[in-house]
Image 1 (cartoon, rainbow, N blue to C red):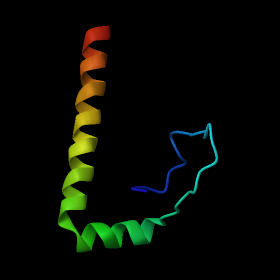
Image 2: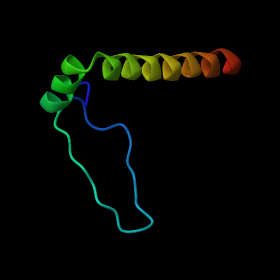
Image 3: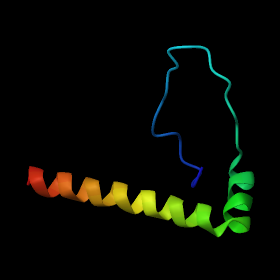
Length: 60
């Protein structure tokens, strides 16, 4: 959603699901219209980056 790179994850449903598709442009529109969405995306990205840094430091 945030860049044009190939997906970095996959998912497989164990039961039938109803999926929702959100294109990148529409996602950017939502983030522009709803600042709280952008803040939450940034918060989660920071948490994930922090966790990866901690893993790398622990492995060193």
